[in-house]
Image 1 (cartoon, one colour):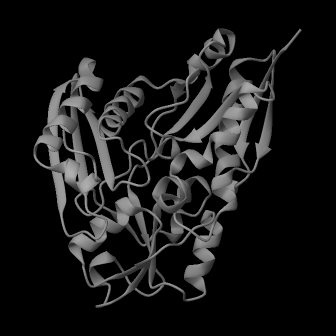
Image 2 (cartoon, rainbow, N blue to C red):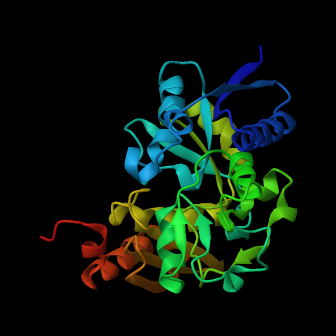
Length: 307
């Protein structure tokens, strides 16, 4: 008797690509596992006229998928880790993560060769407060407006001339075969990536040990270490889509380097700091960097109550 593994996923082309990628790997590893997709529309996909910060944050993309797992309609959910809140609902766990793709943001424009060549007052589309704050810190003259919807919708709005440029995650464009549309890969010094950007994660019920064992084969240890550090940093800062927070970790042998950023939404103030330590202490390093930045005044930027 084959084991059934149903994957809850959003219905966008990118989400379906990611879910099918996970399914194809599982099918190759386990010939006796019946893997299928269970596509569904989330609240985050339905509300397109406001930014995520205005309607409740990144959890809107995964709530329905978690309900499906709790109701027994799916065993796992596949997510872009940048869409996963720092704290998961009780009973849920990110069981494993796949190897990280390119974490950088992508600058896409029909008229301008790179970010530096944007003219005064250029109109840039992004719904990310993280991107908005960093771009405005470098170029306060820019006019930045929200651009929600799937990747194809955002590119269409650019084609229609609604924006001089848009900024997206390069990993998503590459996975959809649209890497040729990328005008410039933005260096982390211009736009530090979101926590978990470029990483596909698999969520399941913490009590479902059979499913967890099946999926463990997909886990990429180095990526997991980096993502754990980034998520620990964001969790300590109470990070969400409502906060301009960024973090990116890299490994050099046994050493982990984590860069964190907290900013005002209008880019008027940006705090950036870095910490280095043993990879075995990834969570502790994330917390330590967040605490150091809070002591330096990051709490005021995030609107946190001071004790």
